[in-house]
Structure formats: C-alpha cells, structure tokens
Amino acid sequence: MTVEQLDKISAQRLEDVDIDTLVEVNSRKYADGMPVEKKVAGMIAKTGNPYFRRSGKSKIKISFSDNGESLKDNYIAMLANV
Figure: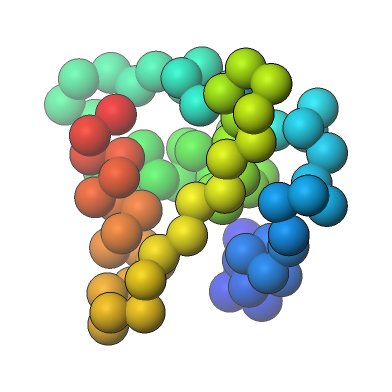
C-alpha cells in the first residue's frame, strides 16, 4: 500500500465507511513471537484498511496525534499489544 493510498483512507469520515467492509477488531490473531513488522504487514494485507475496524455494530476509526511519531511507529506499538 502506498503512502498516497494510506493518506486517502485516513482522510475518510467514519460515517462514510460501510461497516460491512470492516474487519472485527478482535478477529485477527497472531502467533506469539511474530515480529511486529510482520504483524503490521499482515494486518494491512488482510484488511486493506489500517484506519478502520468494527466492534460488533460499532465502527472504530484509528487515528494518531501529530506528535512527531510516525504512523508506522504508532501502528507497531498498537499491534505489539494485540
């Protein structure tokens, strides 16, 4: 996925995203000890959308503050806790 594609996805509004296209937040499991980089790549490859998930009938938008940390760093940190 390119940076341009990620930017386009991240700019979407939550209300404009079809919940039926989203992956359940707890549906993806990874083997213990899997490198975080592989988790990130696998999540994007399997879902195509690193910014939106669902939990039951609720949509979730994942965003990051503009604190100098990159999307990659924040996404790795989030997946490290999965």
